[in-house]
Length: 136
Figure 1: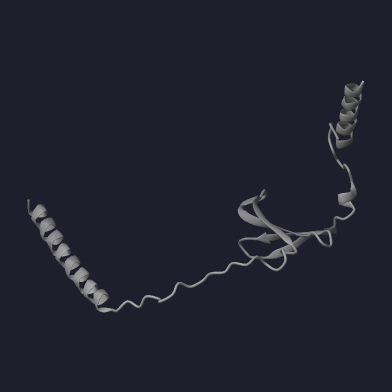
Figure 2 (figure 1 turned 135 degrees about the vertical axis):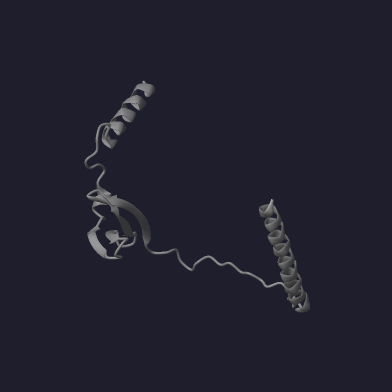
């Protein structure tokens, strides 16, 4: 019974303090004049002058030897010079390490490499055979 009376008194006092606080804040807010802009600002969005030169990709994985260690893989591709660069960043220390860098121009000339069956050339031969059968 005494506990309910104490809770009621604390609740009534809290509500009284809240109402006093609201009245004080409301009085301060309503006393401030509000300056509204006379005109609406114009927002102009222009596309960039030229598209970004490099393509960058971020991904991360857990170190298999130490699952608590997280590593971010940063891949940078320069389509103009046909280069790809791969970095590893240790997220705990911030240390960045160059993992690999190469020119992929000749790689892009290969039709297939390490391809499993059906390879692109096998698919082309199959298409040609179907086309030949449909013509006859």
